[in-house]
Length: 105
Length: 227
Image 1 (cartoon, rainbow over the protein chains, first blue to last red):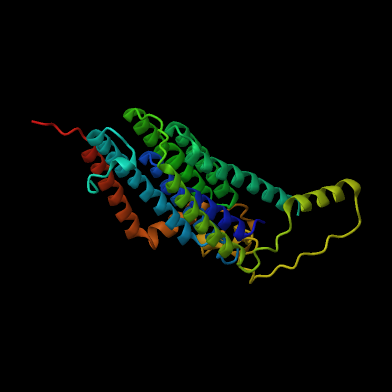
Image 2 (cartoon, rainbow over the protein chains, first blue to last red):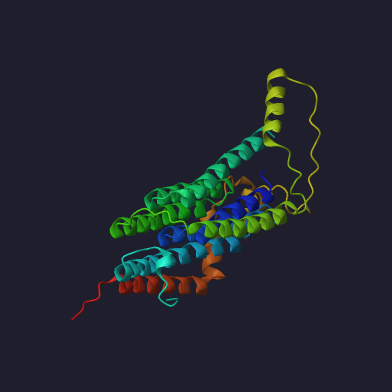
């Protein structure tokens, strides 16, 4: 079988690619996609841990329930976030994060 | 051994595709391409969930992420009529800092994962597959050295799923013989049992969060009338 470490490595790499995207990209929609990817990476780690911690061949289902909650919260977050992006586009006519600098000027 | 190395190779292929698509999300200029890459990435993660025996979560992943969330993203991208990011000269240090921070985090996580006990015990899947295929073809009498299995090797191979134990957990009054007859784990029943007993109140709160999120999204995205 595949060791736990491989799943954790996959999850870590997906998470850091998402983190790099959040830090590098300026288009807020793409930043948001990268945030979703980070959440997804954390669910991979949770499910892998649920298998690894299981006793007598039954996974720990608490971790899978938590992963389900992450998915639900991600859906709510996307709805709110995209509504905010639409509102920002109406106000500024752009979705670049560098355009939000009225506090600086 | 043969089957296990096949599993491992499949996992490597799926993981490589997922990472490639994740890089695509960050690298593509056009948000529509990024969204498509994100869908493929989530589908690959769902396939990895299936491989881990978490079928219900895999399906949920496909429906919610690759279905609903992707459609929302595409809808907003199309609605807002966004042009590609224009390349300005000021992004240089920005990108360098981002990649540096992400690289440091990646190094930390990878070091932590590799240094788990038993993490590096697994043999190379391609080599194992080649040896076992060679033995099948040639009929080599040489026995493969038995791999010692340590229960304490936390980071090592995941424990095998046992349908009998799951059947007993699902229905504690079942007899041992009936439990031994079970051939598959009904993932959904066990998750549902956990969800509606231990996590009943958080689940209801999650429902309220989703409802208030949706109402908030409608309120935010509504066109405000000037009069």
